[in-house]
Length: 78
Length: 320
Image (tube, rainbow over all chains, first blue to last red):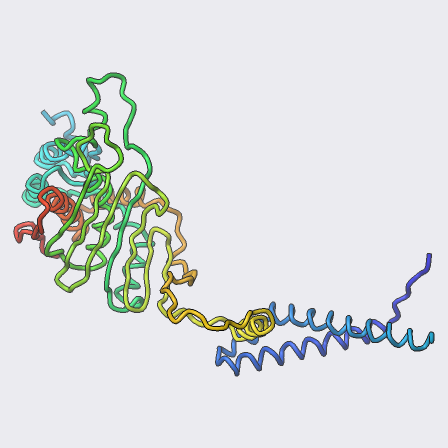
């Protein structure tokens, strides 16, 4: 059985990507508050939804990265 | 005759309706405070006599309109007074059950004694047994004495020899134009019971312990954004469409009026004992009970005669 080792560098990279996703979700929330003229307290009160969007973006990016990695590997093999 | 009760401070009368008047008057005259179940009496004259005796003897007469002690109703009333639902425009109240209202009897000779609610001699049916609770709430919240009532009643489903209506529908007019629309029946319970207190800015449903706004706050911005994105992706673009949308009931879930465990029956009895201890009745409490009984019996009269029945001036109790 093959051991999979997750390095500290890999963890750091994923944490940074997650953080970027979080800031993107917060940015979306700010955009929504200003667009629909709702209360700025939603920056705090809507954090659960913002976190949900964070993970959604993260997994979309992960999907994109996996597809990109797969294509790259295919090109390299050929 | 009442000497054996002379050491009592107060009594509770929970007998069939037609018995209330003479028991109440006897005990009040004996100097004993009385808590009497609603409705007050089978006739308006009897109810008036009970009020007069209470005033003359200075003894407390409290009627079992427990919603007057219910914290949810008290809070709802305060919200109405504060203008939270705007100008009061209509009260719609209903009480629906689905049973024959009968109790088992050991023999036919006890039919009228046990099932006294079925017979006009002893009871006003739905009006005196159920409507008094809710019409009291309507009068209390509208803060007016109705001027007149129209109504219609029938024995629609339970055609089992009963004399009282099993379905009633009434409209009470008030001097300020607010109407109380009331109905009750015992052949469908889907909608249960409620008093819907409607204003131009909101609605209160105290039985459900909810208050609703006519203009509920918009959903949070992020939810609106997500919803719009979803709609943009998944919604079908209509080619032509409805030119008119039906005004379906609001979907606002509303807010709780007040956190409370339902024990207003207990609270009203605590209130009665407190009143006995202090020797002072609660202002306007008897007025509420009396007006509820008058309203119910005038409603019954309106249905029986198929006429508009005005509220006689001699049956208006002044506010304390």
